[in-house]
Length: 218
Image 1 (spheres, helix red, strand yellow):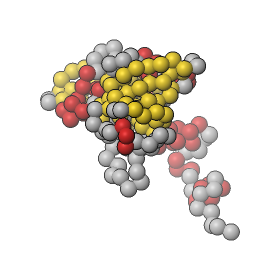
Image 2 (cartoon, rainbow, N blue to C red):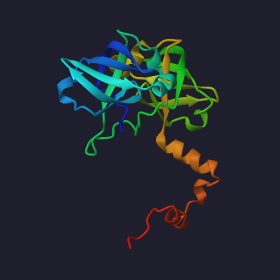
Image 3 (tube, rainbow, N blue to C red):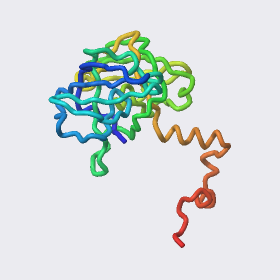
Image 4 (cartoon, helix red, strand yellow):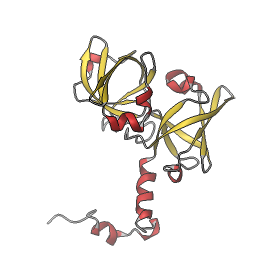
């Protein structure tokens, strides 16, 4: 799990095709590659990837065909900038929101306008996740935890502060930029309950116990 608070900006060094997937080598700018363990999870612009190789100042990750097809990673090229965040420790402060690193859909920046010292982005909202994105709710855009400023049926808006513009790839986002989107995990589970006809008001102690929650140990 992650918080959506980007800790570093990396640069794509090289991409090597591998059995339909790819091995992606990134050069972090502040993270020390040697401090990360093989097998450790890192959020790379919204996608949770596993460290498979380390070198002098480099980290490598394997992306399978599913990842390349369902995220923006398939279009990455050497020189592209990537938001990086190490996995959350249970003792860490949760400054953003819970982010799983499982990309729900790819959106596109439709418009960008200055707003005070920051900027406001309007992004497309794929139908698959539209019900999960609500005004004042949380959304992760390329791994960045943001609050939804406005939500429509096919688009939504976020307001970016100067810190976000400086420390993440969203500072360079412009109309046409494709981004990884992840809806709030809580919204996802509420939608799943509704799919099975379980309204929030219909959840009680009996139902929770039937599902295995709160059951006393034998």
